[in-house]
Length: 182
Image (cartoon, rainbow, N blue to C red; front, top):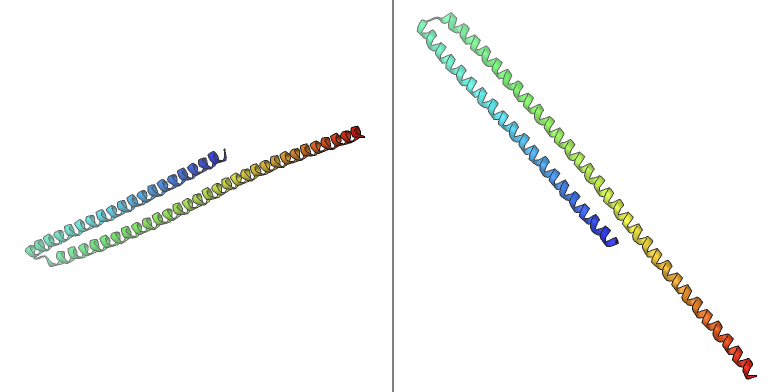
């Protein structure tokens, strides 16, 4: 029975370790997927910004050509100012997007740290449970050993009693023989 209990405990330990390893692998996969998605979003934003910049440059060129053709210097200055303002706004938007992405990354890192802490706590709890089970098994073994020792002591006492009874019988027989001889 004790061997069966020990084997069951070992199997439970193995299953728990396998489950923990699977959980860690799943968390790592999720983290990798999140990081890949963030990188893809960053790349897409950068591509969009590059396209916008290219479009703005093309517009600037076209406007410059038109203004040069029409020789409208005041309008050219106004358009240049507007384009500069648009570029500044685009740069500000880019900075804001980058800041938002950084904040998202920080939040993801914090979440990952929390998940790792939870996993560590679960591992500690499982280890404590296993230690408690092992202590219970050891107590059962000790109790069984005590029972065996008590049984052995009882048997020894019974043997001693039997021997004493035999000795008494022998003494009585000897007395009877002595009496008969007289």
